[in-house]
Amino acid sequence: MKTILIKITIITALFLTISCSKDEIIKFDILGSGVLFPGAGDALKYKGYNSVDQTYYLNESFINVPLDQQKYIVDFPIKVSGDSLNFDRVVEYEIIAEETTASDSQYKIVEAIIPAKKQYGRIRFELTRDIALDNSTVRVALKLKDSKDLKVGSNEYKKGILSWSNMLPMFPATSSYVRTYNCIILSTLSKTSTSIAFYSPNAHKAIIEALGWPVTYWPTYVSGFADPGTGTSAMYGVYYTDFYAQKLKAYLDAYAQSHGGERLKHNAGTDKGKDIQPRVSGAVYIP
Image (cartoon, rainbow, N blue to C red; front, side):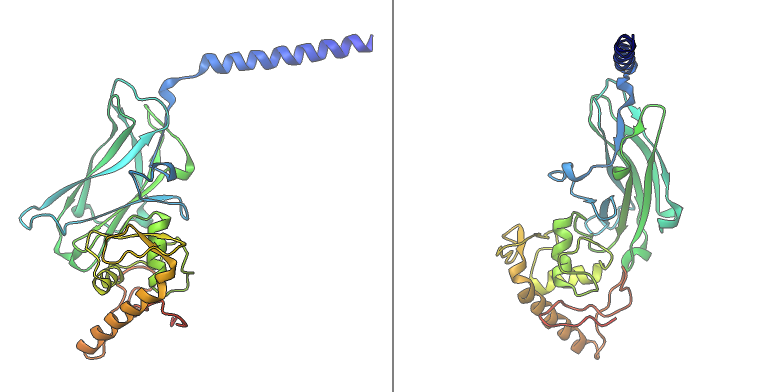
């Protein structure tokens, strides 16, 4: 009798499992696709994802916009993890106030959609030129929210930050680009850190001018011997760290000499207001 009861219990459990599976299949809804910002898997085209803080960064500038043009349209990329559909889908978001420094007069968001038959969409910003950004950078931090058309796809890819100024725009925040910066600029971070905490436009511009790289060029880091030269290689090898840091040191020393001993300082990031320090061999970070 006990054997029969055990068999009945097993059959009942299997029946319930199969029933649940069938219910899940029946209830699957293609309209429930997830919305998210581009991530590590999109780096070939969308290079702004930083895995350290799980944020997608987009950095823009009025530097190449004609001076008589007061408005600048920027599309912040978003995508769906499911299928594209035959109608536009509205994307919901919220501004993260404590991480946003831009004022209402400097920008507005005009739409947020995944267009019909597309996998990728946009949160469209209209930026307004402001002379205050000649020497500073502002940003808007966003967090995706569930909407009528789309649910948030993943917590890892729901945050984005748009930064802009009238200065040199930052290189992509992807780890291989950030490491190049941290290899040359001395900070409390290691040279292979992927944190952008110590980034500043002044240091970025100093590196480019010291090394003779084009304004639009920034090489990716590799743990080898690649030499970016004057912008002819897309990669920067760790082997050249001290060589290029020494070039930056010479540039910074010349700057100080021509400015009455005043050193060039960071204008953003953790070291804002402090001297820019090159990561030359044997250098000790000065807080």
